[in-house]
Image 1 (cartoon, rainbow, N blue to C red):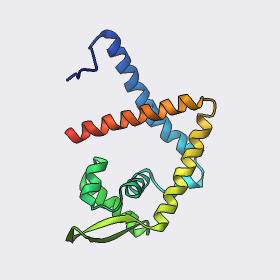
Image 2: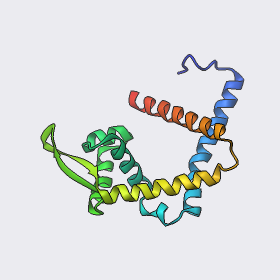
Image 3: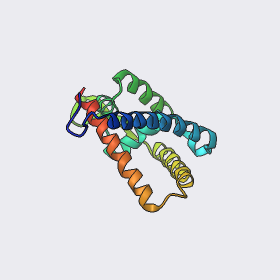
Length: 159
């Protein structure tokens, strides 16, 4: 189903095909670059743990169901990931103030420290990769990636 922003022209199809290819390459190359050039800081958390800790840091403590919905993941998947993070001392469970029967999870100081180390390492990596780009180009890329992520998230919520 097309929305008002696409006209369905042959050029639109070519452009959308280029976008699909570039996003696929971005995902593959981004992960490969992180692994190949990653410092020890990159390896202190796997990708799933990093995303969970980043979300909890920005959104605050939440129950697993809310976290799973936000990350567009199955609750059982998030429960396994959260259990591993708890076992490693990177998150803590506390009683849910809104529902005494449930629990909420939040990052521990150790979890926040590891997350910050990975974030700093990734920021340095992208600083190196984008060093030849102008500040305006980097800002444009950041804005367009944010818009893409918002659009993806919005579509996933509607499903």
